[in-house]
Length: 145
Image 1 (tube, rainbow, N blue to C red):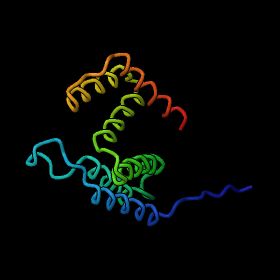
Image 2 (image 1 turned 120 degrees about the horizontal axis):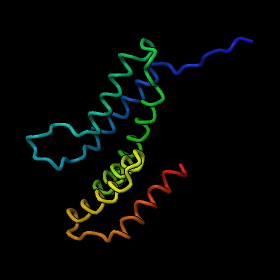
Image 3 (image 1 turned 90 degrees about the horizontal axis):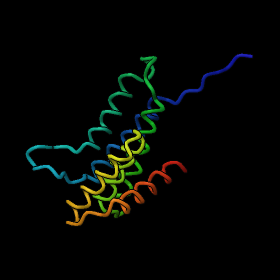
Image 4 (image 1 turned 45 degrees about the vertical axis):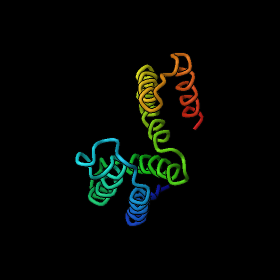
């Protein structure tokens, strides 16, 4: 029995990544940095890098991980759509940052980061207990996906 390898067409993937770039342009998250320090936000840069990498490497480099590009693109798509649908930018971005800490096994850093951002954003630092509970709930949500 011969196994047949099924692949996703490169043009299809590039089309989807182009849609992601367009969504990032429409969403255009304002930078917290002074205007002179950043012309493009990190999400726009990530989308463009995924497009460029796929265009240059897909089908040519055995080490190219299309699945990883697709996972990152899906995450960014979800994040941009949440903002596009009216969720507060700071909340969506903060949850993304916290999820990254959690996925890297840095739960304590996630708690510290949450407390620091909440104090900066609202002038009131949540208790350690409340912060831990919030991070635990995010972690539980990640584990059920």
